[in-house]
Amino acid sequence: WDMVLIQRPEYGGGEVWFDDELIRKNGQFVPKDLKPLNPSRLK
Image 1: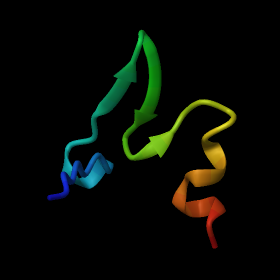
Image 2: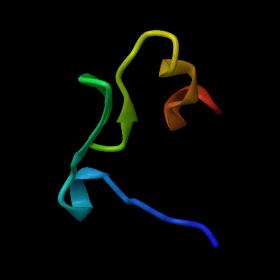
Image 3: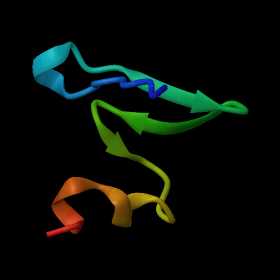
C-alpha cells in the first residue's frame, strides 16, 4: 500500500522533519540537495 501526504498550501500546508532536519515545507523540498525534486524543477 502507499501513503499519500499532500502538503501544498491549498490543503493546509505542513512540514516533514527527519532527525531534526526540515525536509519538506508546504509541499516543497527544503535541503539544497533535494530541491531538484520539487515540481517546478521537474518540468
